[in-house]
Length: 325
Ligand code: UDP
Ligand code: MG
Image (cartoon, rainbow, N blue to C red; front, top):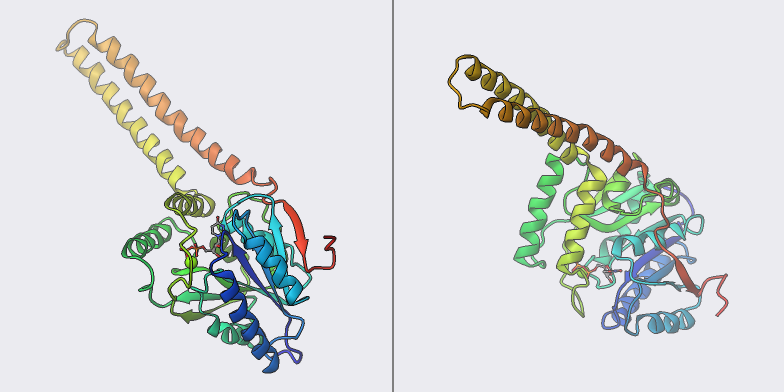
């Protein structure tokens, strides 16, 4: 166990969360105070609220809170809605070098903050660079969400993706892990998969996911689908490989059929013109499926090479040292 309590940055992405934010802040501030009093974390620990282009009063609530709790509450406003994953990434990467570790959690308090002390224990004692909070059961989620999530984790597993089932983004990451994460330049981030790629020592803490405190889910079906597709395509090239394999199999089937067509022609069982048409067709079909397989392999490579556009733009900050109004 490290002698001095670590400084922890609590990163909370917020999209139109005016209904829940005051409650979440009150709870987090109380919890941080008692963690500081119990010498679990340093007094310099703080909450960073990332406003992901909200259209409601979220940002003004963040500004007010940062003035009411100088240093303890800080804010970051993104210029537009870039989605949960990118908003979280903005919060994490801007805190490199500022805290010993970050803990990311949702604004709606579905992530049970009472396990935070245990997460910090793992960071200090193990010491684990990454601590995953994993949902023990999901009765607070709708039947649809539970079913699709279960199926999704099975598919990811089958595709060979290295991922911890039922871990969303409630997670502790050391400063070192953050620095490593910052080297991934891809645009479509699927953080829970990316952090597994870092290869650092990890630990798991289980919790029961609570119902959303106020407001409605900010994950529309479209956003959920987007996340699911990003998860698969950022962790696995196996779908492309499967298509390529299919292409090669079809190539051989078409070649075999060409032999058969030629054979029937030799045996004289064909209508005139059929053989040449069939041979030409099979040849083109075989070539195309083979070409598709080869191109698929290259497209897969390009996809993994071309991940270096900016992922977010910070519009302004509040409660931080570089704050200029
Ligand atoms: N969120 C965000 N940008 C978005 C959508 C969601 O920052 O475009 C945040 C949201 O404010 C919350 C977290 O991501 O803090 C998880 O969203 P939500 O609780 O609505 O998802 P659910 O728990 O229903 O999956
Ligand atoms: Mg939620």
